[in-house]
Every structure is written in C-alpha cells, then in structure tokens.
Length: 232
Image (cartoon, rainbow, N blue to C red; front, side):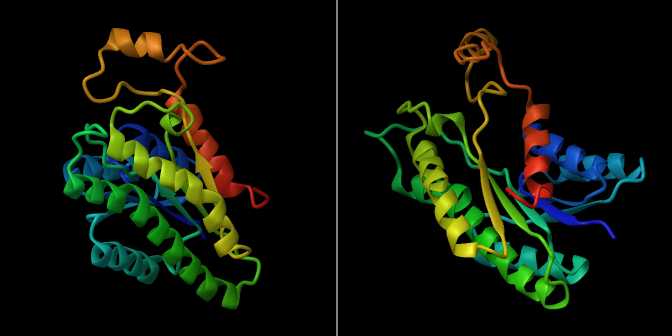
C-alpha cells in the first residue's frame, strides 16, 4: 500500500515537480491548490494516465476551517498521511515603510500558520496510525527561501513570514518528536521572482559557491529524500 503525501501549491513550478517526483517514486500524492484548479486537474490526469496515484484537493490556506477540512478529508480517504510538504506561499511585494497590515496578516496565515497547522494535524493523524502500527513514520517538510539566509528588505512581509517559519522548524521538531520528524529546505535561486528579468536572474543566481542557479529537480529530490529517510 502506497504512502500518502500532501503537497501544498502543487499545480505550478516547484510544486508541480514535487508532485511528479513523489508520484514517480510510488507515493500516493495529494496535490493541493487554491486558485489553480485547471492546472492541478490537468497534472492529475496526465500522471494518472501513466498509472500514477494523484488526487487533487482545494483549500484556502488562509482559512483555518478549510485547512482542517482538507486534512480531515484526506484522512478519511487515505487512512492518514505519511508526509506533508509545505510548498505553497503567498508572495506579494511590499516594504518595511509601506506595508499593509491586512496583507501581512494574510501572508503570515498562508506562509507560517498554515504550515504549522498542517504539521499539527499530521501529528494528530500519526497518533491514530501508531495505535495500529507503532513503527509508522511521518515527516513534515517546510519549504523556506534563500532570503532567510540572505536578508534583503524587499518583499518585507513575505520575508518576515519565512523567517518566522525557519525559526519554527527546530521548535516544531522538538514539539512533535518522536512521532513526527520536521525538516526545512531553503533552496537557492531556482526561478525568476516577481518582476525580475531573465538577465537579472542569471546574474543573481550565480552569486553562490556553485556559481550557478539551483536545479529545481534537485530540490524536489531533496524533499523526497527527507520524507523517506526515517533518520533525518
């Protein structure tokens, strides 16, 4: 029986690669979407056509009742997840001197509170799974951002939310241990962001020790490794 994984924001970019990577490794993937239903369903049909197990599920991650309903639906259908990959994020430009508190709150809801809530719900599902299988493994993976280690005051609210999530990784790992492992992944630059030009991305993506942009396929492979390795 395949292990089940929820990947938030799974319809586009890195999320789509995560869905493909886990599905091709024989996981049963739940591809979450908020506003990208057409893309999520197209990906589902494509992968199902090759014999892979993919379901789609919709939720506004800024709304706690929808997050809880999504997890309850998956638990009812799957018997419980083994992993959650928190990939979805809200990425809106603002500055420290001109941010909108309402927009900041929404980014905190999506980028910080929803990932922590999903980790909590995974732990509750895991308690039920371990009642019948004491050796059952579970892992939550938080996708962070290179900005948490390379501070830049643009996208002020977004960066604040990701900094808070990065600081929460070790804390949540302590809180949910030993039932659930908690890991964080902060990729280098993998895609142009916002209004960034291709030329600017090409230059910025080489400002690291490897002197090249990071391949998103490697990031997806890293997430799968963390989900599957019971010792991390």
